[in-house]
Image 1 (cartoon, rainbow, N blue to C red):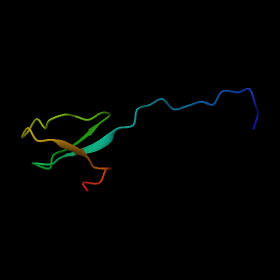
Image 2 (image 1 turned 45 degrees about the vertical axis):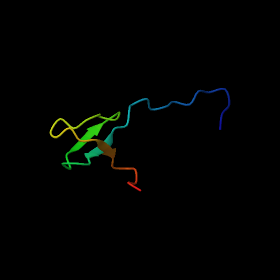
Image 3 (image 1 turned 180 degrees about the vertical axis):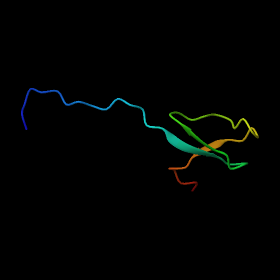
Image 4 (image 1 turned 30 degrees about the vertical axis):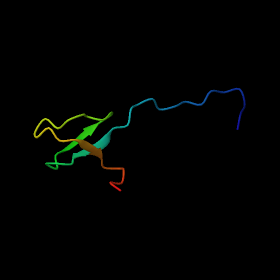
Length: 51
């Protein structure tokens, strides 16, 4: 590998899928979406375990 060269990074944000724990609504967002606009419930990142 050549030295003295910068490595290019992809700076595009990666969105995650969140699910409302009350009504099951799914949304895709770059950051936690807060409260569900349908029922006021909390969202959980679907990539993380509920345990």
